[in-house]
Length: 287
Image 1 (cartoon, rainbow, N blue to C red):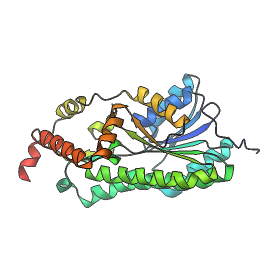
Image 2: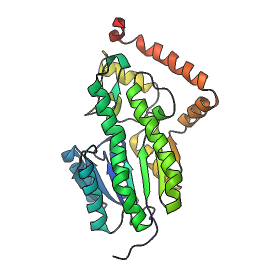
Image 3: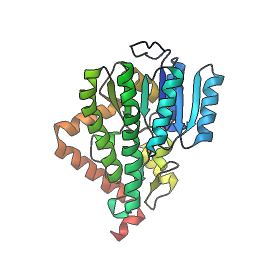
Image 4: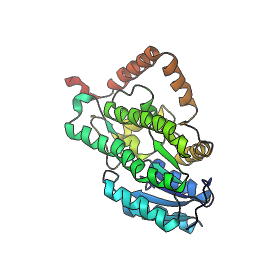
């Protein structure tokens, strides 16, 4: 098949979105489809992903759901290769699937560490490894990795999460430098607080803290979570401009700058925030 050697933004493009069944992945998939992109929603929650894909098709968009465990490289490679071969192109891969494990490091087990590293970091690595060479082969493509503001600043009560997200930021910035020589784009998304299930642990994550869901929601509301659909619009506008680091909502960009200008001040802010949260948590009385 003759390939058009230019990425499409977004009309007529093909995109894979991991973790596409819910939260940020769902919102990105829906907005990509609205902009004319054919979307493959890859997720372990296949029934939910099928529902989202059906909604997109019923609205006139193009979408397919596939069952995928991002920690399984052969499965990832198969999804990416089949998408490319059936559509004749792969414009975007959004390595978005991720989990959160809340609580201090004193509450982690080694299984917690292994799980979050496997999903959040290895899942992104698997997506890159599967898509990068196909994009080089076709002469274009955009790899978009979901990190977090926790990848740009201290994140107490989420040390393991921060470790994986810092790694994704470093990976993305480094790969962007290499990939540009071959016409491949790489961006990293660093969301602030977005109103998604991950705020309460999500389906596959966990909260190692003795706190009610109601109290947890109340704490997150202080950050004024952004709606996922608005988030997706802003992110895709930035992806279209090939931004290297995409921070949404805008307020969090100011916080990022503060942490860059004064790391000590950023640490102090994080410590004060930690103390405030700890007052609400019974589980810290033992440590």
